[in-house]
Image (cartoon, rainbow over all chains, first blue to last red; front, side):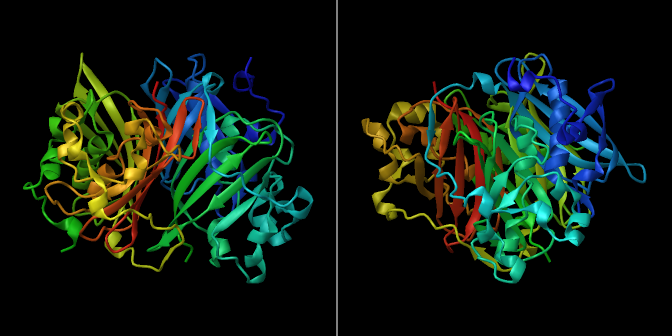
Length: 281
Length: 281
């Protein structure tokens, strides 16, 4: 039994938060959890993980347990409460399956929150050679990094997800908090779930969107709404702390890209993502 | 009148190749052009540009003429001949519109070739500050780079698109042709269309997929099928030659990512893309 075939363990906050119940015709019911709130909306990576979990259920028993390439376009802000995920199988058979999915919520009728295209496969079968030239991020030791749970009370009330993430941020990326951003466009740190839920491929859909935006390190505080996010999961992560590094290299015309790399405790590059977001006003 | 509002000029091969005819209900007819063939299929960037053009037509008059973030999952190999693009508007109003689209072809019934999610906007309105830290690629002068049209006759018969691209490849990336790949995972060069069609946002959907795969520079000749490709168009390109750089930093378990950056003649980073592809066998 591989990690990803293990029955969902609802002992963990993340698994309770992404749980889905099957309805007819490729439709799944979810209940978006207010604990993953950040400001007025829900964390985009959390919403994507709910959809990713519905896609995993849709493909159960087909030999494609793992997200390989998942792209999401954000249409309107998701809110805590009931949601429906509609899935449509676009391709099956062979090594990969592709599913289109939308998540919608009741909202003056019904409103789509996100639209997703997802190609799944089996990372346990991805056992070829590994040639990685991308350098692993250099992070200060855990004891020198700052937990999100240590944020001021006001911020924690606006962002209850800080208590669910065991993130420890590199202080070199937090100069903005005292008005001295590094202007490198970097945000990096260590990641684990606060309740020690082990990392797996589905959880990486959240991990790549769990740190503060790089625009803070560019001296632009405030919310940076994501238009589009694509995640490539490249390997099932080993247990333990993850290293997460976000980098922006082109802020232009009111938009910026944010690349994220996630490394596991075994030193393997397990996920790469890129998003296009709006520069904070 | 901005560049992207100009009526389609069918004087150019690319514009004839991506032309669509409107049917009812958000449906468009296209005729995929054998001139963009590479091996047994059609170039993925060309197929994406056909879909991108249909989306542009779907949004005509709505104030969202330009692709900003476009993700495509490849479902089956597209072939020259008739095709249907079905578009569905997911979000309109405000600064952005999002459309879902599929391209299908008659094939023992009908088969989907690609599925696309596309967020469009107006690059003419994206006039904020530009802060780019990503370095512009250093390319040898044009006269020292190699045109695809100089490829051996056998290769050109298998890849007629080589005659339509004015690509000039950096010889440092072509060591594989004599059994001496650089193993850097880089493929870069200059790009223009052979018939001097000026670059615009839609054409960048092709440009990011027009060079040989980076796996050749890693000593792995052969076809590298793309699973997923996401393109961010960051600015309308200035007239003139484009610089295109592809880089792979993680080949692992039979998959590799390929990042592409496109710079225009004015030294601006105009597009960023990433694809996940299968390592050649």
